[in-house]
Image (cartoon, rainbow, N blue to C red; front, side, top):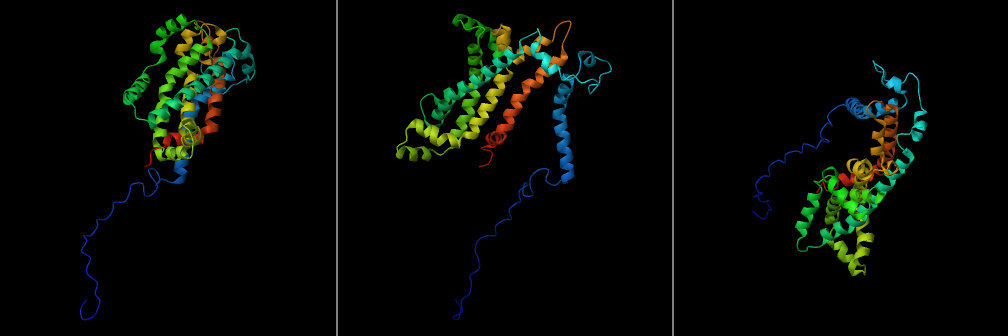
Length: 304
């Protein structure tokens, strides 16, 4: 105050440096390109990934002679949609039984993984117990092992149990080798849920199982969907262990049945392509149904 007049004191704080603008302030990488250019780039990438499937589709509609013709033809000169009918009754392998075996093994292995991985992931995320980190490390180590490496030992073990050449053996193999991934991914989702939510539910009278299934599961559903899709696809495509453990043609999955059409002196390539198309259709349908939740599960935790 000077002579009865209020005056503003000068600001003694040092001037703040200008904040450097984020590199993503304008929309992220690639946002500066024109829309037609991005559309063209997207179409080219899509065609690159769809080209092998297009070759399989057109190959499945050709005759064997046309497939082996030199120079090759890209599109069938004579269309043979009847290949998709005759391949189910070929003498090489009983395809209807192979399809049923693939579905039973994949679905049962996925369910078994969820039954075991859900409580394990919840318990390791919520409780601190002796040996917890060692347990998680061992779970991670098992992910480094593949059925092809242990298939000889697995065969001897299942032979001792009397379950060689059965669906049960392959259900256990697929569940065991996909359990580690499911536990780890769901563990991270359960750990991201505040523990205060569990405490509030328990104060309201909810038990541990009610807290897990009624409170936590809706919050970690993207992680569960991610574990389901990866487990199902891995079990659906498993080949090495099925080739050794399953000897009966009807018990073998499609991945093994597919090789029956490729012989030393003769190969029915039109059926190879047809069975391949049939084998990928259920996986594509599954991806289309849960694609939104799958993307949410894969990107969860990327933004703090």
